[in-house]
Length: 118
Image (tube, rainbow, N blue to C red; front, side):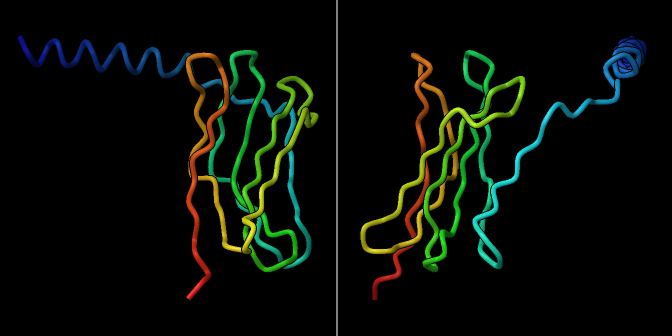
């Protein structure tokens, strides 16, 4: 009886899988390029309650240190709605590790600081 249930479940997964495997369509893309030979890295993406996209990570503005970088895009066009960058006052590297939404839909940024001080 257990084998029959497992086979039935597998058949359902396979049947649903063929329906869900439609080819994705790329509506828009975005590239953040801080400049030649500089490090820019995306580390987290979330969708806001209004359906827009928020991405976060780090970028090197050319001073040799990583800064926090967060950007919100329009869901339909990819147009940048706003962007935010924060540099540590003493030049330490800072990177976004995760973006989350609180119960009100506010964006919370979590990350880490890599001290360059000795």
